[in-house]
Length: 97
Image (cartoon, rainbow, N blue to C red; front, side, top):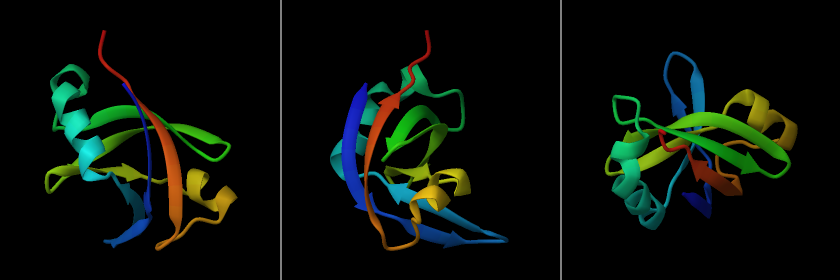
């Protein structure tokens, strides 16, 4: 399953700050349809994503009926991304074989 969407980077402050890109409702609904074929437990969904020239593998976290795409420093810093920035993502949900 391949998706493309845009959104605003958010910051979660815990013991250390984490940055995420919330998925839009429509894309979240599409992922829920295949979640059982993708998840490896706890509702997380493995994906391969691209923002600009940076491609990375991670797992979506379920949150309040939608999903959050984690943005590691290795993804954010080369592109100077921070909270409030709007980005476009190309993403593939990695289904289990």
